[in-house]
Length: 240
Ligand SMILES: C[S@@+](CC[C@H](N)C(=O)[O-])C[C@H]1O[C@@H](n2cnc3c(N)ncnc32)[C@H](O)[C@@H]1O
Image (cartoon, rainbow, N blue to C red; front, side, top):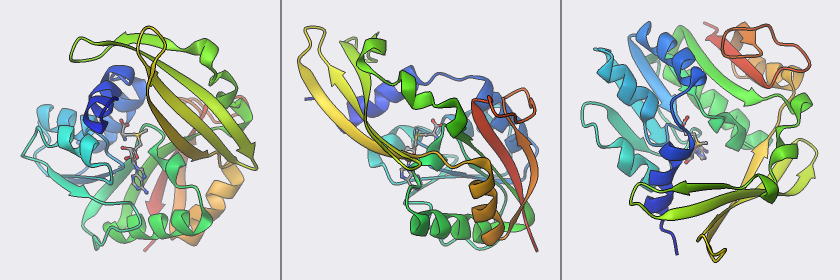
């Protein structure tokens, strides 16, 4: 057995601070009020506060174990909930979805409801910044047990983590993440579905929800988006 709390603690180890976080931190430090949707363990908002952000910082996530770690900082608002459940009304000038959190919005209805709630949370002219993996780069092709990694978790326990794609249907990839003991005994299996929207379809959903695209990049140093780009990084503006 490997608990939700242990898995959440392992998340930060497997996803250390990187160039994507620097990208979002720069946007956050320029905004007065920041909403991080799917904030996970809260790394972005923690870092913003530590870097001197003096305005409103609010993280939303449905995973209580992840939010439990985020709550280590009490000078930030933490809300349990999904993107679609948010009821903020023109309160933020930046919303983010980092760490590919956007891709968990799989069904059209959930995607539309989530984008509508994010638009409603933003003041007119506010920005929504997020990334989604470029389907043309087929990241899921490397998600297989041969690429398993061995790590030592924060409690000092060695574990192995492996990914396996179960299905690719249209633009939705279903995968498992397996956590094992060093002898191979399975401790937990998490199943996830991720949507790989192409750039044009994504632009359509954004326009329908009241956003216009301000900038789009293919990499974290603001490289142009080209067919081989690993990411589709979008900064969208809330239309009045
Ligand atoms: C890959 S993690 C990214 C976490 C964090 N943004 C980061 O960069 O480390 C995806 C997060 O999305 C959250 N999530 C899942 N479904 C969601 C939903 N419908 N709305 C908002 N967040 C959701 C998960 O609980 C998880 O914390």
